[in-house]
Image 1 (cartoon, rainbow, N blue to C red):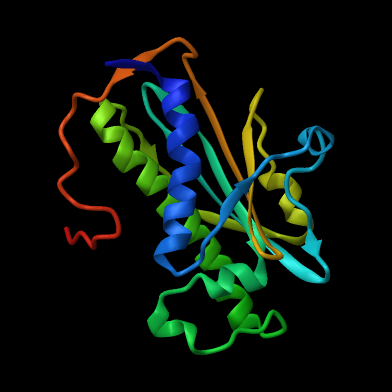
Image 2: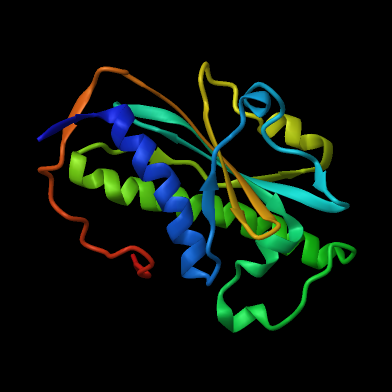
Length: 193
C-alpha cells in the first residue's frame, strides 16, 4: 500500500523521539503546540534558570534532506543517560559535566534520527547523516530551523519539556510503499564494523 512520504515522516519522527527517551526510562507524551507558540521561538534559552541544550544533526538523500533538532533542559538531558552511568549526579556549574551533557544532547538527536532512518528503510528511503552538534545559550538561535515549514513538536513529562523539530525538505506528493526489507539490526542494537 502506497502512502505519501510526508504522512510517513509525520508519524515516524515523533514516535522515534518517544522511543529513544523511553529506552532510557523517561516517558514523554506529545503536547499540542498552541497557535500562539507556532510562530515564536521554537526553543527557549532556559527554563526556570535551568539552561536549555539542543542537539542538532543534519541528513541528506535523494528523497529527503534536512535537520533534526532536539532540545531540553540540562536536567532532562542528563537524566536520559544509560542506567550504568546515571547514578553520578551532574551539575551545569562544572565544565566537564556541561561538555558531557552537550555531547549527550547531540547523541540523543543522532539516536532519534537513526531510528527514523531505520524505520524508513522499509519504505526504501535512505539518507546520509552528518555528525551531531550541540548548541546552548545565545547560540540556540543558530540551531533554529530554517526550512519553509518545520514540523515542531513539544513533548512533556510532568514539568519536563522536550522541544523537537524535524525540518525536512522532500517532494510533498512523493509516495512510498512499505515493501522493502526489514533492517538487519534492531533498534538500540550495537553494530560493530
